[in-house]
Length: 157
Length: 157
DNA sequence: CATCCGGATGAAACAAACTTGCAATCAGAT
DNA sequence: ATCTGATTGCAAGTTTGTTTCATCCGGATG
Image 1 (cartoon, each protein chain N blue to C red):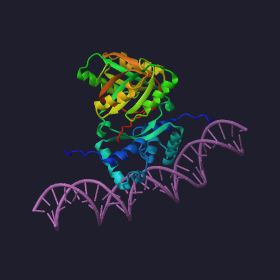
Image 2: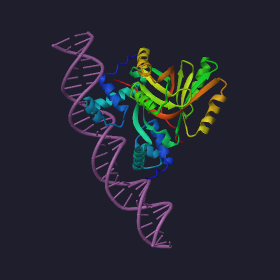
Image 3: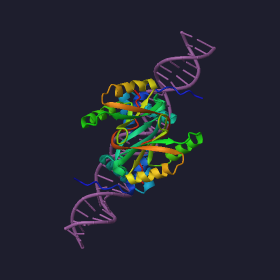
Image 4: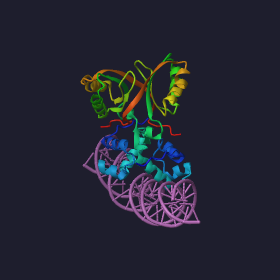
């Protein structure tokens, strides 16, 4: 099993750029970090292979595509038996409106981030996901009034 | 003021692809949606100009770059005076470790998503952001044990 | 101290993708 | 029937991404 060497300063500088704009030409990245374009390209490919870079995606404004409402949901379950938790994870993850799902410690068991077109849609979703699920004890809803900051950028400095 | 025409089925199909992988060649997108590459490219550019596409970014695995801990924080403020709320928004948004920040209704006022390297770092962050901020009444912490689903994809179907 | 070896690099050639110009098409309004 | 504006596809031109290859560097070995 090959030990995966840590990212060096070059890799981190490249990541920092790609997290903001992955359409930046390799030549320009190279100028910014003092490497040739091929060197940049090889480092990027390595980080993709290792899973440091999970994906390359376009970020879409939810409001502009008919999903103006973002909602946080704290979910508390009845039983924490492993198989029930796993089933819940799969169930939540499979729903397109659930864009994020975390299994957490604290006063809740899951936290979901949901995007919907209307509150009626959310109401229907709660019915499907929570009321019809025997293992959901209770849930609390937080409706976002302002998406102050919305990203998945990770500090790499 | 030009009314912005709705996205048609072509645009939505393109978005659906780009949200999963924005390195997909336009030629391949064209084949998938039955358009020529230039047509695809013009539609993409238009959606970028209109802000439908907010950004094109690489998604980085937090754990692989030394931020293995993701934390949700519910923040409750003392005063909801507009200027204080705005100040809080700017303050939270400016912190790199805060990757998401929403202003919400319900039993909390803000919900933050934070990524840190260690709990000690989180403790230091709470000191800076909450304890030293007079307008923060209380906050609750939820540490993520499993990042079940982590994305910003929006259903466009 | 010389040699070897693995890994990374840059220059150049090559391939692929993006971008633009242009003529043709279509739908709706006049 | 005609005009207008918007969109399309094709083809040419340009930029970007990718591969090849010789070189360089550092550490281990004899």
